[in-house]
Length: 275
Ligand code: ATR
Image 1 (spheres, protein in one colour):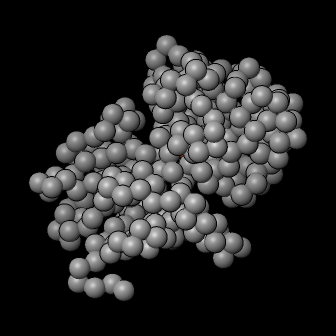
Image 2: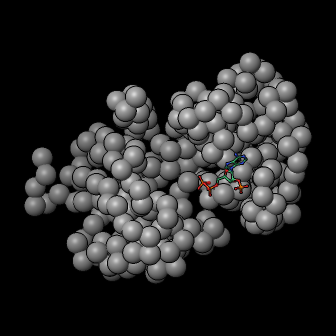
């Protein structure tokens, strides 16, 4: 029950109507037994600063930030964690005890946590990242922080690939699609395969011994994951990253760690409900 004591957290974005975050976070609050509730606020592009003011005025307990506000929020908060500073992008805002705002980027760390949950170690791995948009950049940065030995970035647009590779220092390279064959870890960070059966790479390059991750989770089982499985590779679906970036947000907001399985089940139930 929502009372006068309930702490409100929310996502800001545009659009936000399809966000899975309310389902994930409200399931986490319920399972932890804490008096928090999570809403979604549609905030027009350019209005993120005013949303942060509102967060402080209204006493919100935490904020998730999605497109198109991640960069504006990174410029507006009082301090940034190392990943958010490197990416100039914030997906999580925390209100400190003195009322100031800290910005974090949990997407890349969420991907690493989802790999760890499945028993895959990133340290020393040769990774190939397909895509260099916001998600791709967050993943390249997190792979470098987690100790990947090599990070090849394959992207349709060369300038974006250059920018992503710079996040990985001397372990990063812009690569052609054939780099998939040499990788221990292949991550699709493009939108290719979302609501379609398109593949982001040639499936003939996939093989046993690889771990193949798709950040696309609609459909749940993408054509890439099917192709990887057929080739004998291990697969990790995109709900893992979504769930674990949200687990990290919860920990930042109130210090408790919800069960990822509870949040995954809530996301799956919400996706099924929408079908
Ligand atoms: P997100 O925030 O989810 O990363 P984004 O920043 O728009 O979204 O990035 C989308 C990524 O998917 C980019 O790497 C994009 O490639 P470009 O940089 O060349 O635009 C990639 N992408 C989208 N559609 C694609 C397609 N049809 N073929 C190849 N890459 C595609």
